[in-house]
Length: 306
Length: 247
Image 1 (cartoon, rainbow over the protein chains, first blue to last red):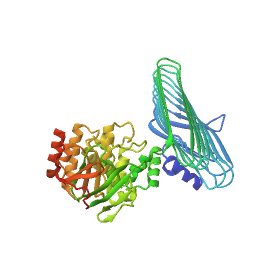
Image 2 (image 1 turned 90 degrees about the vertical axis):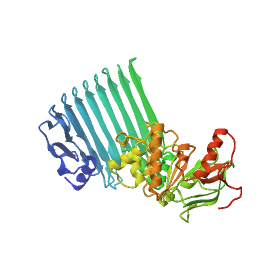
Image 3 (image 1 turned 120 degrees about the vertical axis):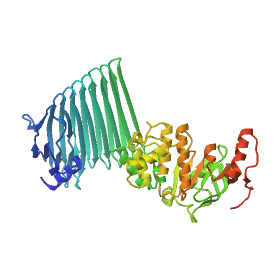
Image 4 (image 1 turned 90 degrees about the horizontal axis):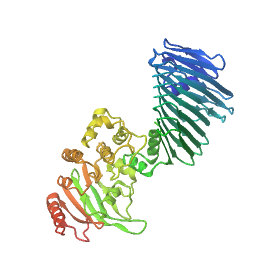
């Protein structure tokens, strides 16, 4: 494992390699740089595609599994398929960050396709941080695909964040919810320079009393461009909320299109979208507390994306 | 001491709001600036905090001319300002704002004390976002708390702190103002129409028509103001300031 991987792991997983405890799988430049299963969480190679199968047993209660992936040089186009099977009643935290690094003119890309099959009454907290680093002119791309199938009364919280430095990202998320299942999505995106980011969510509320709460917050700085599109389909008695808040700075641009489909009279769906620059009064307030204008802007952005 | 010398301020449209304001805010005292709506009270508060720049005149803090100081510089010079209309933030928590104000990380006990002073149950609010999910009264109390947390500020300016505050919380707020006053060392300038706030003032300044129309100790000014309010008639207000008096 090289030093760049170790650095990226520290950022995307909030810890260094030696502090991983329990189950983990570290992916480095399309290969496996370390793996460990635990009593309740088994990690195996996929047989049909590159990637792993993570089987989380019901004995896992508040247990964490780390599956970070790193691309540390240009010329690597990493494609991985990871399947998560979460048994009925399990309670697990999945940390799945990704870092891409390029110091040359070649593109470094990670394309992670994650599928979740969440059993009855199971709970999943899914944490994902993305970052691009390196001084090379080669693009740093991360294009995650996340497909979720949630069984009765299961709960999933997706906490995803793109910190900085990712040249382009195309994020596709789909979810199908069974009866009583709840999905909470918190997405935060920061783009700068000429970066582009596209987020596309499609959530189908298929079971009675299922619900989704989707909030995306983003900051578009420099000449960057972002697109946000969400579709919530209420096919039964259910609740859905979609919110897209974006802060514009410099010449940043954002296109937000939340979409709702109510296919049942008892579907209760809401969407909100707000785009604008930082309110002048917010900067003034923080300046009255002693911050400079630049410090105030940074504080507001940091808080917004926290 | 904070001193305003012949402050004039004109709107870009041309209307003159402040027409030669002269006032001295004594150190370590609680001064209330009051007067009819539209008289220029909030403009004076914003002028002191640096949100407005005077068209003419000078502002001194402890002998230093701060007229050209911007908002940040004035804050760092020791001026704290509580807005009449609180600002909301998506993402920043109550704790974030209070810690920014105090310029350091704070323990729960300290934050509890500050929020308790404004009538909030701290544990419920510390980690809440200071956004539109808060009611107007809650936001107002948090706004005041951010000024109370400014331990390094020597001049605390509150613009109508009573607005939007319920009766019970208002009692806590009065106690907090009295405690600050009795601790000494810091000057309080409160823009207010509230009789209960004027009752704890050391000094009262009446602003009317963009000028100081009267000023004096509470004993000199308040009885006249109350009589005026109850009868609706004009009456002498303490030491009425002559038209061209110069400080």
